[in-house]
Length: 187
Image 1 (cartoon, one colour):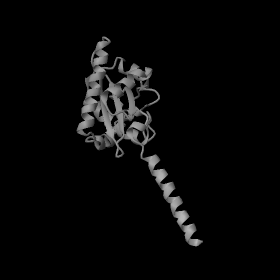
Image 2 (cartoon, one colour):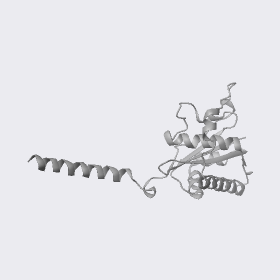
Image 3 (cartoon, one colour):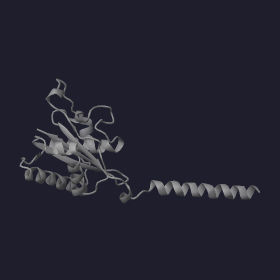
């Protein structure tokens, strides 16, 4: 009797373990693409005498991109500019400072997908001199789908079509393969 109870326990544990592993191993096609709830921006009334530049986070994020994600981010930036120009707006210029901020924010989104940073500060505190608007996304794996999603969202579209003059996009690929996108805007 003791052996049969032990076998039953082992079989039950195996079944529970297999069920848990199969639910955790969701394929990319089964994971819902996601934007942040609303885009973020700030105006002149948000300026203070204090300048925030998170130099440690910027230094850690400097070499974050892979060739694939960097190329996809540039392709998305080009699509954003095509959309702006088609609407009669000037193209954004690529801003290397905002690119660094994008890398920081894309990496941070892995632990907290929000316009609030994991340290509790506002999104723009990576570099308050440069960051005036932000769009986030996750689980998009090509430029077209990410830009189309942003354009389909009224608040994200508003950031893209606003009077910003510069911008950048970065993608962080997490260890599980998930892509986290950050698009930053400035003047």
